[in-house]
Image (cartoon, rainbow, N blue to C red):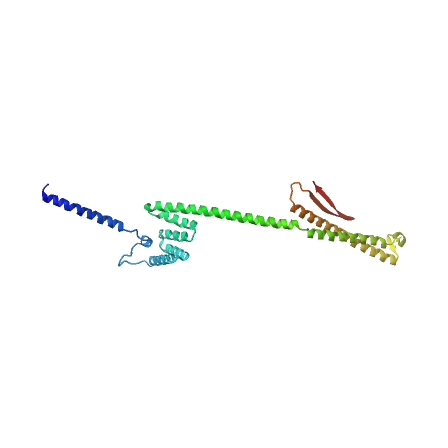
Amino acid sequence: MTRPLRYAALLAIPLALSLSASDAAAQAGKKKPDARTQAFGKKKPGGKSDPKLEEAKRLFDEGAKHYGEGNYEKAIEAWEMSFDLSKKELIFESIANAYERLGQPKKAHEYLSKWREAAPEEEREVLDARLKNLSERVAREEQQDKEREEQKRREQEAKEAEKREAAGSGLPVLGIALAGAGAAMVAGGVVLDVVAVGKRPDEAEACRAVGDRQVCRASDEDAIKTSNTMAYIGDVLWITGGIAAAAGVVLIVTQVTSSKPSADATALRITPVVGPRGGGFVVGARF
């Protein structure tokens, strides 16, 4: 190789290296366009603008401003209106980012999934990684929510058990009151019946049959009516008292047995019985 050719070759090498370095620098300095540019593109000078699209851009910028200020709810609201006007799916990614900042991974996953369906192929791998991370966060939060609900349920059951135990440990006041009142009414009714029998004159001596009628002396007739009235009131009292006393006993037994539950607990049943000639109650037990 002649000397001039060698000099030319030596000069060509630095020039080629310089061009390669310039190209690499240009590639390195090339940035991915921002979300607004990706969604709406650059404005063409002298081009006719679409009022609807311009409003969508304005709303997108408004949402970006709110997002930068930390007002994520307002950012979401503005971006959703921007999407309604423009139908640009890339806006879903911005909404997902805002929901993620709000600590709502479930909503973030929902909107990021919408953008993933329309995203370019080269972005889907990154989006899939984000979606996986969000899914894991959602699963953890749902598990934590379940654990909190279970803890609340256990605490509520414990409180109710304490209330039942406290109620069962006290005296069965209502049952005792009913049983006592019923016993008093039974006693009063029996006393009235006894008094009525004592005040009732002997009908064989005080009355006589006249045809198909029973005619009594006026003084004895008043005594008979008074006796009948007292007997009627006495019957009502002791029958009602018996029912009240039975109900009181049932309440007492129920409270005592419920405060000390046992598989071998005695089952007591009291049934009031009322008939045309009197009344009472039947007591049954199962051991």
